Length: 337
Image (cartoon, rainbow, N blue to C red; front, side, top):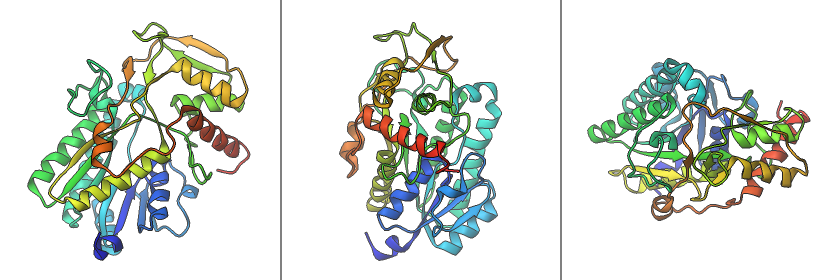
């Protein structure tokens, strides 16, 4: 990596949020320079280290983003800002097409105008919809079954078209289910009214919920509940660094990569893991399936392992649960307030 690239800052959008804050930590741990923009609608100012430049604002504010790019000599963007709750996207699709698509368009425009050449995008396995088979490879058909997935796929399309027209490349990282917390306890998931299973389950284990609703029990899976591929948030954060290095090394090429471990766990298996790690027995309540939830989403992760200098460090369900639980207990004591 050349010195000018190493000196250039990475603008992290949504860097005060759950995944974005872990990416900031990974960047700093690797000696990279970082600047964060976040509107704090779901993020927390305390999650950004005090020595990291922080701008309170909206990524759709092109003048603000262009100013940050110029002032901080930004050479790359990692884009995490957006809305992520599948059922909410079905109830309020326009929110998702605004936050995830229209605002991403404004951000990309500011990036191009500011001469930013590299863009790492927080995409999702929801772009695949209900896949024909699992594990899912990156060349599987993209047929989103909810506005969340569609809004992210539309941004991928914009990035592809811009990369074809400009001196610009991108990596779209299609996340599977993200969970856990920084092993050193520096950040974790503190989102209010979270809907992610492991977060909900550790809240219940800490007495913050009465129990856990299991949405659907007759899916075509081994125990009838949904199956997902869970990736540790810190492994995911490091994958973003690998993606950025790959873009810098091959500036004429772009990438679409699955981020998962290639193994799925059912809802009931996850709840059993929380019971095991927390030493409790969670109350389970069966509930109707949620609209927009496919039966199984498991990554074929061979491409990311082949294309990036990245190997998972925390590929173990009990470890993911333990880190999430440790963070929840800190949060309960006011560590993350």
